[in-house]
Image (cartoon, rainbow, N blue to C red):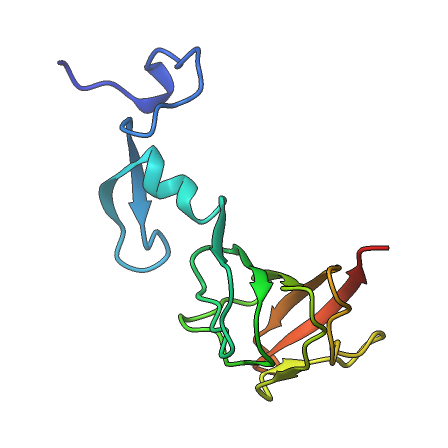
Length: 153
């Protein structure tokens, strides 16, 4: 294939396949280097990664992408949410969904989970009702800040 300017290449008419390879310039402001990346790896940070468990009394959500969902579907004991693993980035979103196994359960949190706005971190489940919480990571405060919580009616 002859060298061409990127602007002279034929445009892809369909959505990229996960195995498609794209050109990317890494560190353009410092030491620019032309590299390749698959569409799958490029999209990874944009996808919602879901971890679903029946029960865990020491839940540890893992930062799998910029948008992570951690789901407990039949919590069978009181739960202490530990600090999420991984390295969060400012603005990362963490969605937590908790349903107990028919018995209300106490919920406690590592200090990294903060509730500087209304409402407070929920302290208990209601039997057979799904509880949902949305957190956003603040790199300024090094905290997962609760933005929203709701419970199934």
